[in-house]
Amino acid sequence: MTEAARGALGLKAKDFKTDQEVRWCPGCGDYAILAAVQGFMPELGIARENIVFISGIGCSSRFPYYMNTYGMHSIHGRAPAIATGLSSSRPDLSVWVVTGDGDALSIGGNHLIHALRRNVNLKILLFNNRIYGLTKGQYSPTSEVGKVTKSTPMGSLDNPFNPVSMALGAEATFVGRTLDSDRKHLTSVLRAAADHQGTALVEIYQNCNIFNDGAFDILKDSDTRDDWMIRMEHGQPLRFGADGSKAVVRAANGALAIEDGVADGDPRVVVHDAHAEDPAYPFALSRLSSLDSRYSPMGVFRSVQRPTYDAMMAAQLDQAAAKAPGDDAALDALLHGADTWTVA
Image 1 (cartoon, rainbow, N blue to C red):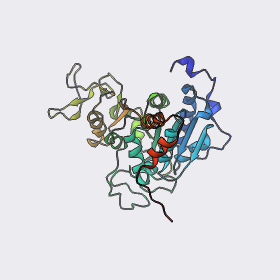
Image 2 (cartoon, rainbow, N blue to C red):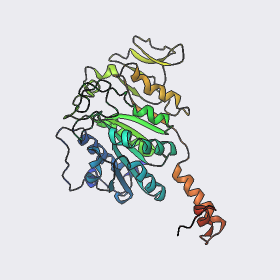
Image 3 (cartoon, rainbow, N blue to C red):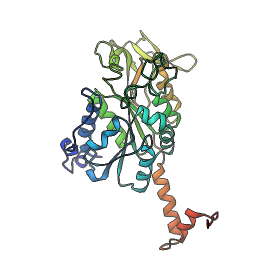
Image 4 (cartoon, helix red, strand yellow):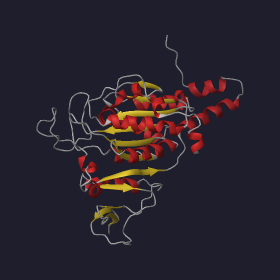
């Protein structure tokens, strides 16, 4: 979309703010995400009545109340299912799902992976604070092993989900990761997701300063972030570290590894390809955190094109209708088939 088209409606960030009191704990990372999304929305060049935010249950799921668009605060874990129905039946809408690590990956796990594999044209913002905040601090599906919480007083025994790995395993066509406090980076990933045709999942590391404060400090502190954050830009070598001496390299066995002191021009250094068709490469990137949980690739892991569920469904309906123009019989036959029963 051209800049002229984006600004054609003359909308500003303030136009996307509602009169509702924003009610999150003071200092919550959700405030930063909300401000970034409200600031980004005018770039879409879409009227507010053609934008919909759908959420499930959790702290993040209050989001629709604070966006001056259409919205729905739905039920626990089911936001992707509701958004699928809306996006499929109303292709003129820009549909966004706001969810959290508990809402999306626990009770909503199946709904999430099926939306991803179907490639429904919607955007999913997954706020990951690695804790259940709304219900006061129980461990979540992304909490680390050994996490001491109210529900795991001796430490969690569960191996955590890696949301990016899970999404890539479902062959999602767009997967990104960003950070609540990095407004510039967050906006750039949101922009890429919005421009994508199909399901776009954006994991957002988000601080819960009440029940899991400092979970991502190592990525925010200027003294440590460069040594652990791997910034991914398409076509650029994956180098990081305060002096650029660290790099993602291809090991002798073909796997990805991280080495320090890698010389300039070393052919083993991986050049990021966000458009690689095979999801094995971005999946390998997502698993770098298994070497050390502090390593965090940030940016767009994968962005590829595949026919959307919405478009394919619409084509089937058009095909059925074309068989008998002006007659609903063909469509009725498609929907009901030959196997029907009458229940007295």
